[in-house]
Structures are given as C-alpha cells and as structure tokens.
Amino acid sequence: MINKMKNIRKISENTTFRLIIFVFFLFHIMICVSKFDSILSEHSKTEIEKISLNDSWKININQEDYTNVALDHFSFPTVNTGDYIRITRTLSDYSSIDAPTMRLYTRHCSIQVFVDHSLIYSYGLKRAQDNLSVGGGYSFIPLPSYHPGSKLTIKLYIAENKAFSCFNEINIYSGTDAHSLLMIENRIPLFLSCFLCIFGICTLILTLISYLFYRTTHSFFFISLFSIAIGTWSLGFYHGLDLFSVPLYILSTIEYISLYLMPIPLAFYLLPQVKKIDNFILTGAYKLMLVIMMITTTTVITLHFYNIVHLARVLPTMQILIIGYLCFAIILLIISFLKKDETSRLYLIGLLFVLLLSSYDLITYCLYRYFSLELKNVNGLTPLGMLVFIFITVISFLQQITKAKMAEAEQNSLRKSAYTDGMTQIYNRRYCSEYMTDAPMDRDYIVGCVDINNLKLANDTFGHAAGDKLIISTARILSETFNECGIVGRMGGDEFIFIANYKDKTQLNQLLETLIHKQKMLNISDPDLNLSIACGYVISCDYPDCNLEQLYNKADENMYIMKKDMKHAINDSTD
Image 1 (spheres, helix red, strand yellow):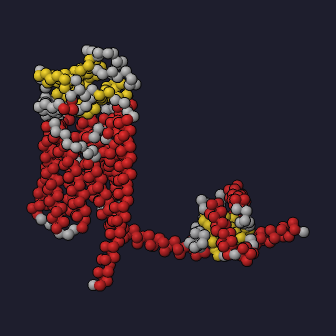
Image 2 (image 1 turned 180 degrees about the vertical axis):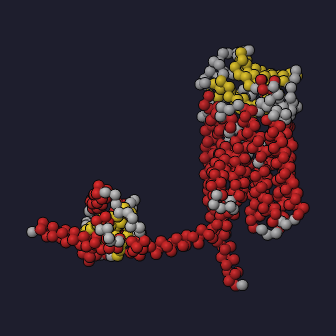
C-alpha cells in the first residue's frame, strides 16, 4: 500500500511538472502569435488602400425606397424567394487604384452590376430561372476606368427563403489586394481549417494503410473524416474557398454538404464509448439518432442534386438536428464521466470545446442573417474547438502506446549497446564476429583489416586523449567510405575491420582511393592529428574455399605486411 501511494505521488508530481511546462510554452506561443497577428492586422489597415462604398446608397426593396443609406447601419425584414433589391449610388473616385476591383458579398441571389447602365458583371440569372441553387459568397468584380459622376447599380434577385436581412460592406481595392485582404481578415480560421483538412487527409491515408496490418485503427479513421468535414466547412464558412475561381453555387454546396455530414463520423467514433455505458435504452436511442442523421443527410443531399429541395432551405432543420445530437452525446459522456472513465473525461472536454465554440459561431451567424444583430465576432472558434478535440484525442492515444514504445526503445537500446563500440559508435567485435558467421557466401566480398600506426607513441607522448582522437577519426573515415556498401567495426584497440560487397576492381580501387583521400583531407584540416593507417584486404573470389573469418585473418596478414613496408619506407627516407 505504501509503495502504491509513492507511485501515485510520483506520477502526480510528474504530471504537474509537465502541465506547468506545457502551460509555460503555450503562454509564450500565444503571446508570439498574438503579436504577429496584430502586426499583420495593422499592415492590412495601413498598407492596403481601399475606397469605401458604405454610405450614400439609394435602395429599393420590393418597390419600397430608402435614401442616403449607410450599409453598416441598415437592416430590413428578411427577404425571400422572388424578392427584388436594387441599390444605387454615385461611384467614388478610384482612379488612384491599379486594376480596381469591387468586393461584393451576396447570399442566395443572382446578381447584375451596372456602371452607367452598362452591364459589367452578372451571375446566377439562368440558374435562378431554372430553380437551381445559386449559393453565396464573395464576388470580385473588375471595374472600368473611372469617370466622374458614374453611377453604380446592383440588382439582386432573391432565390431562397430567409436569404438575408442586411448588407455587408462594399469596397474597392486593387486586384491583388481584394483577395489578399480577405485572407488577412480570416487568417486564423483559414489557417486552422487548412490544418484540419491536411491533418484529416494525412491521418486518413495512414489509417487506411495501417488498417491492412492492424484492425484497431478505426477510431482514427472516423476522427480523420470528422476533421476533414469540419475543416472543409470552415473553409467555406470563413470564405477561404471564395479565393478560388469556382462558381459560388459549387462553393456553397461543398460548405453545406460538409456541415451536414459532420456529425456522422463523430457519431461512429463515439459508438464504442456509448456501448460501454451498458444501458439498453441509451444505447438504442443513440443508434436511432445515428440512423436518423444518416437517412436525413442522405435524403437531403439526394433531393438537392435532383433539384427538389435545396441544401440551404433545410439549413435550420439540420442545425437543430446537429445541436440535438451534440447535446445527447454530451449527456452520454457525462454518464461515462460519473463512472470515472479517464478516457471519457478527455472526450468530454474535447466535445465541450467543439459544442460551445461551434454553438457560438452558429448563434452569431443566425442573429446576423435573420435579425441583423452583429455580436463581437471572434473568427475561427469552431475549427479551434476541433483542434483542441484532436489534441486531446491524440494525447489519449499516445497514452495507450507510450508504454509499448518505451519497452521497444529499451530493447533497442540494449541491443545497440551489445553490438556497438562505446567510443566510436560503430559495430564492435561481437557484432562483426556474428556477421562473419551468418553472412551468406553466395556473393563476393572485400574484407579489410585496418590498423593505426604509432598509436602507442601518440598515447605516451600526447596522452590518451590524442590516441582516442586517432581511433575516433579512423572510425569516421572508414564509416564514410564503406557504410554504403557494407559494414565497419572495431575489433579492439587500434584494429578495425570492413566488409563490403565486391563488384569489380574499379569499385575496389575507388573505395581505396576514397579512404586515402579522406585520410589526407583529415590531416590537412587538423595538422596536429597526423593520422597514419595500414590497410590490408582480400577479395573472397580469390579464396573460394574460405569463409569470412578466414578471409579476415588473411587481410590481417596483408595489413601487417603493409605496416612493415611503411616502416621500411620511412627508414629508407630517413637514411
């Protein structure tokens, strides 16, 4: 009992320390990101020139006129299918802007834009006449050369019920700034959305590959689908998809489909957790809700593509269904929480983030679209909640595999220490001996023996540190020369071995020349090193009846012959 309490205390202390470190780094990362974000925001305000078309509008809505209107303070009853809006004003002078482009945001309506009665842009009229969805989003409209007194007229033909009840700002930018400013305005949600999509796609591919070998990766399969769905929806919701030259109705279709599909992979992901509750009624209700969502989503998407009911028309119903499912899932996870399931607690925290933050985005969207009430907008909350959920899920997964990885790492470390020379970090005598015993003899080898000249003299004269440096340097040039085609090992003291696959004499000569060159360059770079080695080698095809160990002995004999020849050459030059 005492040992158990000590272990619990130790785990608690380690967890607290790691939590403090995590909070410390997270705090500094948030400060840095916040500072960078403020710099980028300030740049967009001061460096990007714009001409505001926010005020002085004449607006006609279903034959009712409004004059001298400022768009950011104007609201009206929600418009429906068949309604008509015309807004007109005198254009401000935009002659100072290169490639002037008007950025116009619309929702579920076809558009015509005129300058002095000349049509300069049109979208969605044919689709609206054919009762097809027209979608919504940003249109980037090139403007003609400015002429004083030119009048701008925008005609909107509403194609869906409860389309909108207010206007967004209309501004003129240069052609490149119109797109870049949209990215800057939504920089945080766009970054998070791209991360979720990339994470989901990569995880999905890895999961499908790993599923061929392990049958327990289904949870990450559903998380990857959920991540892709919420990332794709966020890219549409925060206008990241508007930057591409794709018709608005396609972008809106992608946004709605990803939103409607979003709860399904999450529901499958949580299904095993629900089964652990072991309550027939709750489990049955959960499965029933999952079936209802799948049938409803499939039906809605099918009806849309057959042009019977548009996706936008069922948005309120689908939003209620999604929120209802999330609330039910939270209730089930609270039950798991009360059962003291640590994994469920992590899931609960993640889902709470997703639910609360996505609910905020949903509420602000509905208030603005249907009631023209604009709350303080904090972009990117939904993808941020999903990011937290993924982070928590990854932590719980890592907790499950940490012990296995630690055991595997310990085994690898023991194996490495058993077969690695401590000083040089190349193979030791034990490994080389086993290699020579087990290596197949159906191929040709080069077997070499290398010895350092005058190592004892270096140790006696300059100390063992100088001798160690010679040993480490020899191991390095041997590894750089032979590792790609064989192995290198230290047999003990100043003696080394290399075993390489033999192709022909040209390859052999190249390897020996490379070794000599590396030795020379090492001595040039470090004149105090004065490395000298003797090398003897044999080729297995010259001794077909010998195994590798016998070949090594012959290479050792050749090495000593070379060593004697080198001493005689030094003595002759001295004389």
